[in-house]
Amino acid sequence: QVQLVESGGGLVQAGGSLRLSCAASGRTSSNYVMGWFRQNPGKEREFVALIIWSGGTTKYADSVKGRFTISRDNAKNTVYLQMNSLKPEDTADYYCAAGDYLYYRGIAYYTNTAQYRDWGQGTQVTVSS
Image (cartoon, rainbow, N blue to C red; front, side, top):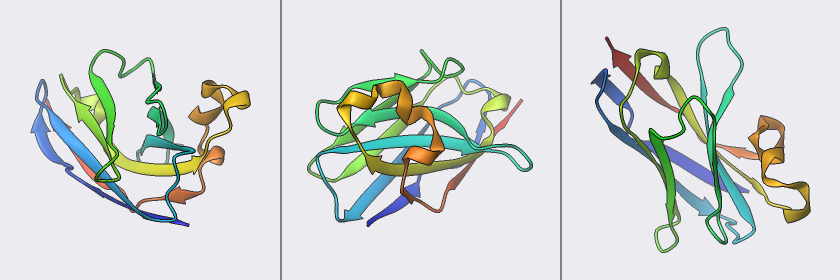
């Protein structure tokens, strides 16, 4: 099991930036996929971005492409989500997740929450207009 702790959320004006961090500890592995998801009350948790720990391949939701960047620091076992040009519709609780990556599944397979075993507690992001 992997323990995940998110940080970096807060209140920001539209057009501003935030950087979320997700520190991983426990049984980490290079065969992991790390994902960021977000959720608003009464809505399903939706995919934002993912990164394959080994190799660094990334994928983004269309709604954040060009504005958000996911990255990792191997030495710190930390994944980041740099969020620029934030919009009010980006307001949500953001969750970091970890799962076992199987290359033959294809990267799109890992945009589904069901492919992740370990989740952080979430960090709130509020974008004011």
